[in-house]
Length: 192
Image 1 (cartoon, rainbow, N blue to C red):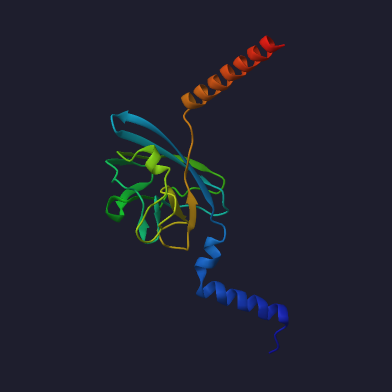
Image 2 (tube, one colour; image 1 turned 30 degrees about the vertical axis):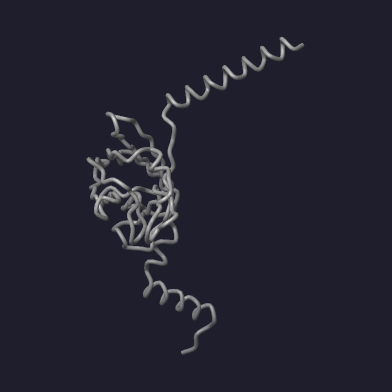
């Protein structure tokens, strides 16, 4: 039996994929995440996250404020909510939150909101850098991981969740810019 070079290459690729299936599975995983926050009582904030699947495969795990081996929250969440079909677990002794689904995987190109938690962790702390010590020192506190399905079932994808201003914040910003423009124009007219 004689094998041609393309046949050998295909067999070698199949062998690699058979022994290392996570390489094939993780190749298309990619995501972004954003969050908003509201102060719900003195010193308590409600964080609402949206996960966006920017890859070519599904997402079944969203692990917030975490990398393998370390969680970054300075305060354990006081309550956690999940999107329909997802379950939540506070991990790493209160330093991270993990959401997992088995039936409602997030499809490529889709977004999902409803990942929520309340905490005394301030927005400035959440936007900060993990001071350490240990694994993850210097990473953003909002560093997160997603997996295709089960946690640690593939190499995963690391991302940094970013804050999104509330609509009222945008309104304040635009109002301030408008007032600054009017003031600048008035000053130019007076000098002319």
